Amino acid sequence: MTGSFGSDVSDASISAAGDIYTRDWSGEILDALEVRRDLFPPIVESTSVVGEITAEASEETGLAAGTPVCAGAGDMACMAVGGGVIKPGVVNVGIGTAGHALAFAETVSDAGYNQLWPICHAVPGKYIWLGCTYTGGRSLAWARDQFGERFEDLTAHAESAPVGSDGLFFMPWFQGAATPNPDPHARAGWIGLTLHHTKGHMIRALMEGVAFDLRHSLECFKRLGSPIDELRIGEGGAKSELWSIIQADVFGQDVRIMETREVSAVGAAIIAGIGVGVFADFESACENAIVLGETVRCDTDRVQQYEAYYQRYCELYPILKDWFRQ
Image (cartoon, rainbow, N blue to C red; front, side):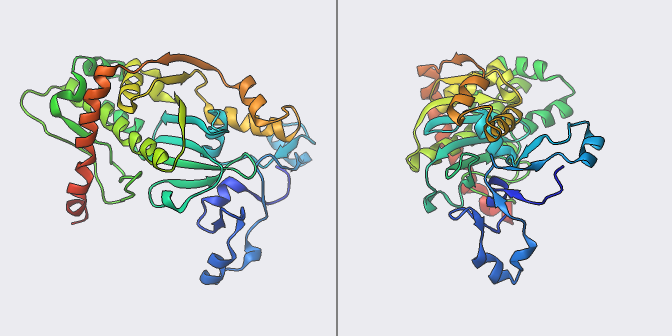
């Protein structure tokens, strides 16, 4: 678009060749691999203006020649901005194809490694902790494809089952486990099925399992000392009233639904707006651009029930990890 090459700091920081502390390429890593430094493009902060739309790019895209182009950020860094995760206390959880949890960090601690992913934030000098489950919403999409029913019908079945699905658990590890046990060998499945269980139990257990898996990330944030004062949920999972209630109860905290569905796109627009001076700073930009909806209240009784089920869920991976690898 501009005729120049470069990388924004967020993408570079998760490339395995980046140094998140210096926000540059890691000479130590490149030297160890005998890879030349000059093969890598310069790294710039996300809000940096890196060039303008060229005449050729204008002809191909329809964008006006001379339009300034900012470095931007990767999908999770954009989602953090679009979700308002630009200061301590605001945490974003989303169930899309995967499932993620994002927390703001002033600095990065080694204590979070091998459980969470540290990413350089689009906010200069700041960081994001990313926790995830690889197949959050994709788990329900798989069930939709296998049962041949719409999402609305599946969730209607799930509403007929009680909290905890009468002891039925689901592990959403279709493509391996992520936070806090990164393991490509882990696999999905229901455990605890009896003749008493129905399709409704199976779907509710699936929805609960995704929420349990995402709670792992929130527990990691807490261990790192990251406050969770406001918990915002978004993406496809927030369209389901039942799944939103399950999240609030499993997390043990009220959740605020984000009305804006394309959160990453909003984040990218905010980054560009700051880069060209439309917005003065991230805080004012987020206040203007992010639309928040209703608050889903957690229920004390359900929270207590889910606490017991979550502790049982936490036992599954340690018990099964050797079996998965064999």
